[in-house]
Structure formats: structure tokens, C-alpha cells
Image 1 (cartoon, rainbow, N blue to C red):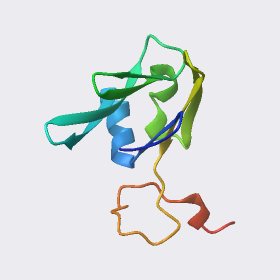
Image 2: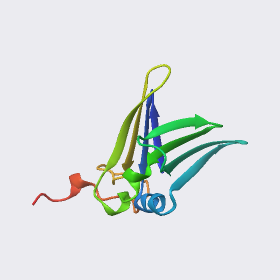
Image 3: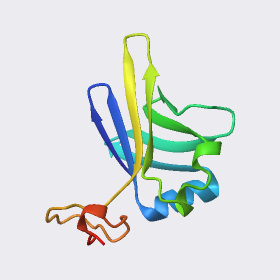
Length: 123
């Protein structure tokens, strides 16, 4: 799972196996360690919500996805989900999407990424 944060935008990108795990177990999480402090990020299916939303608590970002939207995500062609979450100071833009292979050359392991539709031949 990758996250990209810029200003009031948070973007989560999941590989094929991560999307499958999310659909099967209802949650996926990662941590980045900074010495003795860990920064966590997670995506969690939530059957009690109707809109995607995020919270930051105890050095963790958790993105909550309505279970009704995400339960079949691994089995369909939907690229992702987006939501504008109102906050006390403005709006937080949230994006959850499948991670496609890059168009340029990269040293990053992309073996579990989704095929990039821009690299597929047009019929």
C-alpha cells in the first residue's frame, strides 16, 4: 500500500493482493518506523458508514470505506473511490485506487500492480 499526501489531499494506492486482502478480511494496514516512533496507515471496510472518510489518531491514518461500495472491488473493474471530507478548516480530498504499473521506467517492484490501461493496445 502506498500513500501520497500533498496539502489536504490523501491518496491511497493498493496492489492486486492488497485489494484482495481488503475484500476478504475487511482491513489492511502498514507502518513506517522512524526510530522508536511508528507512523501507521490503514484502509478499513465499515458497514456502519455511507461515505468514505478518514481519521488521524495516535500517529495513524485510517481510511474507512463503506462495505457496500468495496466488498466486490477485487472482482470488478472499478479503479477507485473518491470523497471530499469536510473538516473544521476546509476540505480533505480522499482517493483510494488500484495501483497501476508505471508508464516510465522505474526500479520499483510492480509485479503485483494492475496492468496500466494506457499500455494496453486499443481494439
